[in-house]
Length: 282
Image 1 (tube, rainbow, N blue to C red):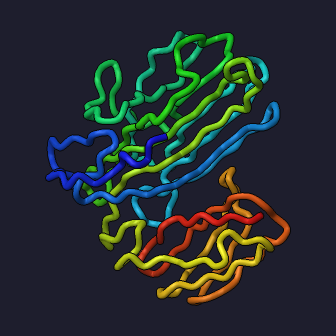
Image 2 (image 1 turned 90 degrees about the vertical axis):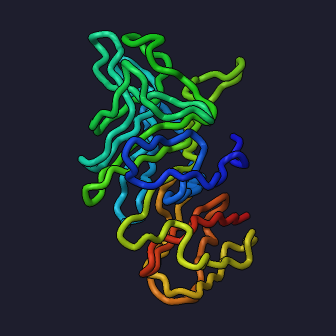
Image 3 (image 1 turned 135 degrees about the horizontal axis):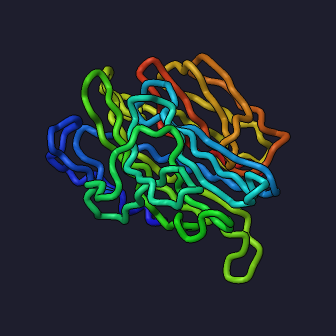
């Protein structure tokens, strides 16, 4: 995954501009880039893993990423879905599958491609978009089973203004990778969106952000401080699951002494979300 290529190019593209187009991997003027670093992995049969993302800084989740392993049991596929949580969201997708497979599936853009949503794809207001599938009896070969740094084009209408963006993700839904056992997994790397109303993006105001120390934390006790009072602080594990939540203040301590691994902190102030921070406990 080449995150170093995601940069702001200073384009003249503005949010809601008529006829303007988004380019995969570019961050147009008026947009904000959020680094999610979400990893989903289905480690057992008949299980699922999911995560939620907010792309427009309003504190409400816009999408749910859902990974399923051997589900439903009648067909036993591994599948990855993008589920929109708002009726004002559309995604570049099409239903080009056989009659038994009625799900719409997304167009996946490579880096640098203009997001024009070519036929037979169109911007569809569908709450369940198919991103990938592996080992299915009914829909063989119609949906990709893996992707490396694919961009998904979405649009969301806010206060009568149509804002376009992309979601960057990778996945591998195969049970075997080059002959070795493989758990189906998906990574949500980043997304761009527009923070209307306050005009403040997920990188906070005046570049304020929470500080963690020590990090890495050998005993799981982590102190935090922030120059702006926090309204909430949520700690998620590498699977996107909430493991700890707290509220209030400019200083505090997180107790993760019973856990190990990588964790991600999502914090909010009265000015909006702060950057997602990574924390390692060993």
